[in-house]
Image 1 (spheres, rainbow, N blue to C red):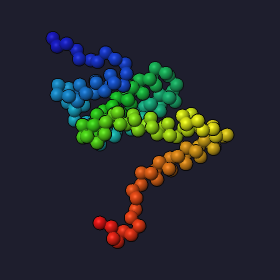
Image 2 (image 1 turned 90 degrees about the vertical axis):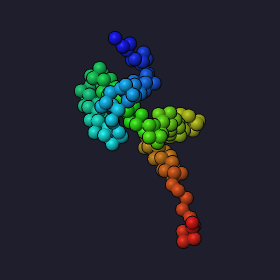
Image 3 (image 1 turned 30 degrees about the horizontal axis):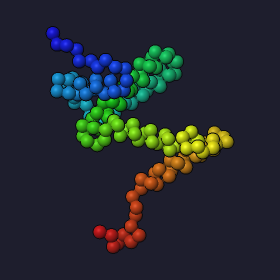
Image 4 (image 1 turned 30 degrees about the vertical axis):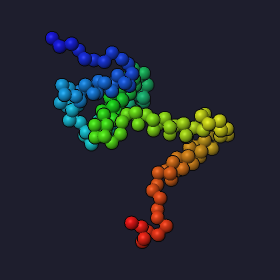
Length: 146
């Protein structure tokens, strides 16, 4: 009888190992064939089920649904990493950097906005600045650009 290959951990890294085994050579055919496109329906389903669990207020059910959603997200990140689009580390680095930027009152010593409305306005202002920074620079004279 084969020795179980289950990672003994309770972290996101452990979930990534499970997903790698499921998608690997001796893994599960269903998990192996999943693509970002095929996973969209499961992503929607798990988000809906999590929202319903929150409405019901049962912490055990909520925890289970969060786990199901994390599994789909781990599958998505693995699929994108396999295509060499980005890695899970890049996803985590990006969201951490974004949250730090969008909370200067927590991470940069800025004063806390006086109201929730001002806090929301600060969030939107920073979000807008981020989007502008991502826009490609337009040539001044497009007719002479290469």
